[in-house]
Length: 247
Image (cartoon, rainbow, N blue to C red; front, side):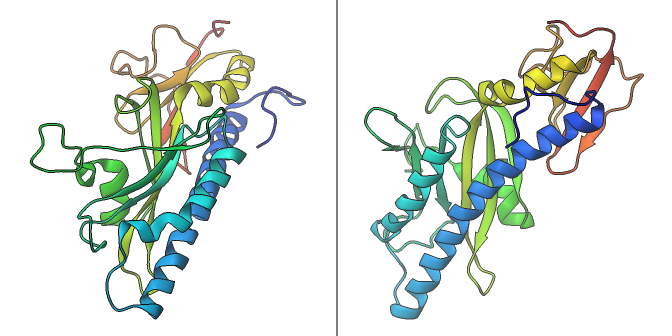
């Protein structure tokens, strides 16, 4: 991704949109690598065996996942695949999801996937899984507090993964901390010279330069005199608020 701290030209709304789009493209490029690895592995199973794969058969994906975590360590706080209901022979639901650890190497995320448990983590109803599954398109959900891992705000990016015949087998996804998004985008936002916030499709703030609108807050009190600028690559939009930005 281009260095967003160097600005040879005047910062405009259009350049802010480009900066957000470039960040999203970088994440989705990583997900495409993981998704392609899953599709290739799955198609190989279909040609060799008649029975459904087991969870352990997904182990070859780890090389690709670890590679993406290493290459994008400052941006990705976790990445992997989340499988569709019933596609594995031994696990009704399963995640091959890994978290980066500079000292010990990646560690696998384990969640409670037993529907009878009070701590059951039902990912099938979450937008980051359901929208790629049901609509066949990429999505990003958040900012949400990541209680399962880091207790920080994250945005979960996801793309659908299908077999070559088009059957949905799961998603490739990644958690991107809002702090990492801010580290990349905030210098450019501050150079814009006006207060501006980045908002998701639910009207919640992701980041910005107005201290009144913090991450996760609603924008119902926001001055709408200046129209929002959509981010075509994402269900997000930029909201210029006028006046000089807070530094």
